[in-house]
Image 1: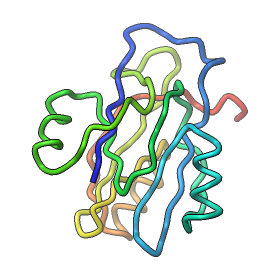
Image 2: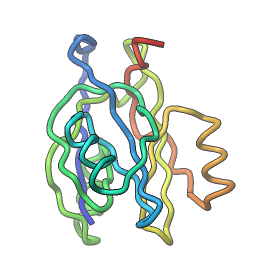
Image 3: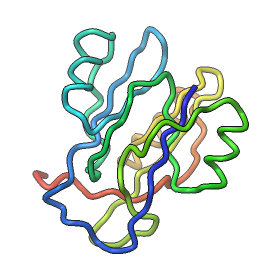
Amino acid sequence: MSITQSLEWSSCGNATYAAPFNGGYNAQVHTHYYTTTVALMEDALVNEGYTSTGDAGWAFTTQNPATYDDLFTISETEREEAIANGYVFENIAAYVYATQICSSIPLYRLYQPVLHDHFYTIDPTEVHTTATTQNYVEEGIACYVLPDPTD
């Protein structure tokens, strides 16, 4: 398992530098994958058995390495606890907001303890459906991201 830390900004970033926080799901290994890098998502879709779940909001880009389970957090304490429990800090995946500012929207985090899989979504209905039909545990708002500017 691995961990990717997301850092918060205290002021609004320029939304023109944001990119889709793309998601995919591999039903064979029961894991979700997220990245802002188009080439990495295309590779996951074409070569690694993932299907697209769409974007989970927009975030400011950095590198997001392919891993078995990504845990995104803005909490240094949570990061250290995860590392103590077997996760490995890899890199900053995206720059997000800790509070709802600059027209940002909640990015919800859920966890499936049997599959050891974290799932992220901006859709409150999807939170409820995933929790009730797939036994994911709601972990609340992970951070705030920008809405899709094309919607």
